[in-house]
Image 1: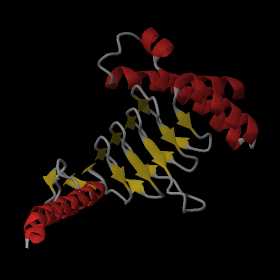
Image 2: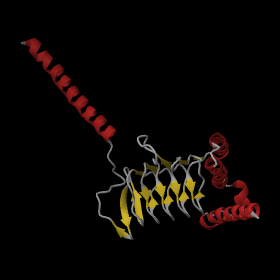
Image 3: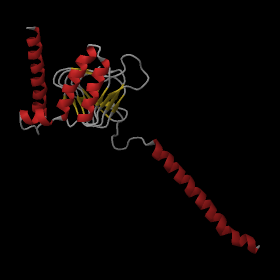
Image 4: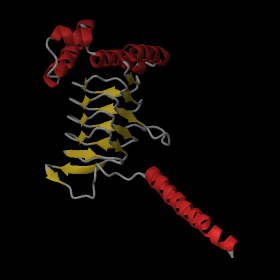
Length: 228
């Protein structure tokens, strides 16, 4: 009875995983197509196995299963990460989910997302992602902080601080643009972001132009000096 119960729970989880894809990906044509061809779904299933091994303290075996999943899908999920129901990883190539990361229910991740650490913490060093969160392509959420329920992280954003529920975050570093449906007034220019390297290069170019002008003036003054 216990084994049967576990099997029933496993198939229920698989159905929920497939349903999450069918509901959130307009390109999904059939259940069979999703099961056979969606790398994000395969990565989640590899993780469910590796996570069970990890909880059973079969650490090396868990890492081996995780590594196989990474080779086959291009998605790296540490077996220690905790993942809720209905996670949808769209495309998924380059997604990285760290060891102490916790992901709630019905979360959507796009390709190139990193849920990582900053390299400074010990213990809980990866983010906690609330329910119904969407994290767009290339976004980086780094450190032990929480992304509140129903929040959205814009493509390419770098989030280093906690995000309240019902927020939209964009930029580098990530800043809250919308919260609870209201626009947050901030000096947030997504087109003209600070470019310190560019500023240094422009300052050097101005200095070079000034030196060239001085050299030109010296050259122009030399014939008259020699004549006198």
